[in-house]
Image 1 (cartoon, rainbow, N blue to C red):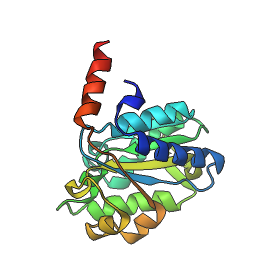
Image 2: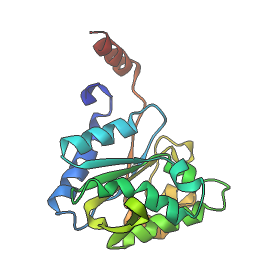
Image 3: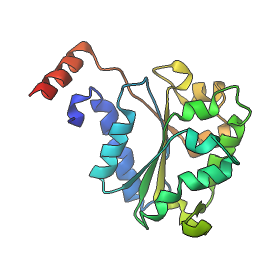
Image 4: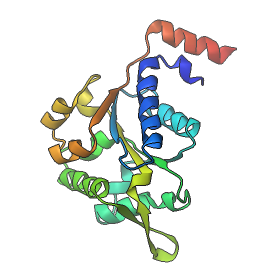
Length: 197
């Protein structure tokens, strides 16, 4: 699917600028961000394709990789281990359904935020390599995108995220918020017609 057909033109332009900034700053201060939006608004697709266009590695993390068994730090270390194969290539880590990890009745929600905060504030991430060997990865080479449907709201900002339980310390490290939108009927028709051609 052509990204121009998604009905997300403004969002794509803004996220594209963020990716350019990530590359231009030589990864010294990654502009980590939150990507909010309803299901079916192509959040992963957009980020994955922009990563490819910018020559960045791409890693997708799902909630079950972080909270199933063991401590959150152990699970997160394993989930991030594919970064080893990307070498020193700057990469994007897409944390899918982050809202489910942090906004719940689950007592681990603060732990998840704290573990990611530790990563964002550190110079290296320690990940599990082959044969259980721990390998450091420079965090300045990683752009984190935290995606989800935060509080079920289609438009959200930093202040609202704080109100619904995201820690201020976390939001200091992840200071940008982008919102996807549902495509209009016209945009949906355009997408369907392009698929039939």
